[in-house]
Image 1 (cartoon, protein in one colour):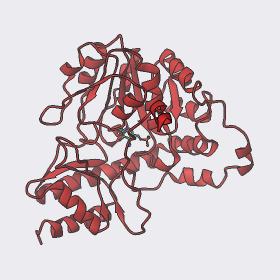
Image 2 (image 1 turned 135 degrees about the horizontal axis):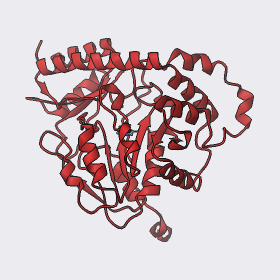
Image 3 (image 1 turned 45 degrees about the horizontal axis):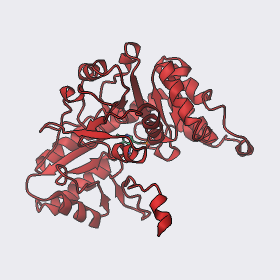
Amino acid sequence: MKWEDNIRKAEPYVPGEQPQKKGIIKLNTNECPYPPSPMVEEKMHKIAYQDLRLYPEFPEKTQLNAELARYHQVKEEQIFIGVGSDDVLSMAFLAFFNSRKPILFPDITYSFYDVWAEIYRIPYERKPLDEDFGIQAADYKGENGGIVFPNPNAPTGVLMDVDAIEEIVRANEDVVVIVDEAYIDFGGISCLPLLSKYENLLVVRTFSKSRAMAGSRIGYAIGNEKLIRYLNDVKYSVNSYTMNRPALELGTEAVKDDDYFKEICGKIISTRERSKKELAALGFTFPESYGNFIFATHERVEAAEIFRKLKEHDIYVRHWNKPRIHNYLRITIGLDEEMDALFAALREILNLE
Ligand code: PMP
């Protein structure tokens, strides 16, 4: 059809499955197995439904911006909020990656980056991780139109130290460097302190993992005021009221409850460390993970086969049929009892009974 020639064609990001079936063990999309803070639940009952007829608070001056600024000890003008970090990252790609030179990101990384680059027509180059799935700072020093990577990286869980990140940010002061800290709360060290030294750094965070609120779609970025102003200008050129009122209110409560936040992160970290031992005993190897997931490969049985058989046990993990990682499974850290069910199913699948 002729009209089809004039269409912007996209190959969309494919998220992990969200099966509706009851009773399954869902370890495939890095959600938090614990509920959000009880303060969030309490607030939910108090949200005035009549207020839904009004637009949300003024986009840059919401209670959530203020609470996040307080939490991170930065100015409100340094916070940008959005509908999940996917929205934040997408706006950041649109705003900051506007050069003819390619942006750089790892070959194995969050698989939304190349999707945004394609849809916004941003040239890009993938830099191969080393054999241990590490990001090499030296690869990010050539001419480029901007840089983005998660820390810890996804789906590998590998953490980069702040000195290596600083090396990249310092070597690229003429472009914006985005560090996607979606998984930083599970034992990693954040690069946020670098913000006081470098204007070209944007740090992106999400409520979907460590704050147990994937369903409310909240993400944010922290950067210097000027950078955030540019980001807001682009956002308000697309849609200024992206966050909804309940999400703003519930997100604010979540940030206030720091004790609960630390408690659930601590639980996930200890389950992860125990899971590493269990998986190793079953014949899996994996890079040291600092995320709420483990990226594991088995010494004997193909990942695709394990993936399929786990599904038959109603246990969902993530598998990508992609170069370099096709023999790996990304296993989200669930509740202790969910992990025990996984280990039992694996023993059966691997004939280790
Ligand atoms: N960055 C990384 C590295 C992720 O794995 C995810 C989760 N899919 C996101 C960003 C987006 O998360 P959300 O939009 O739920 O904040």
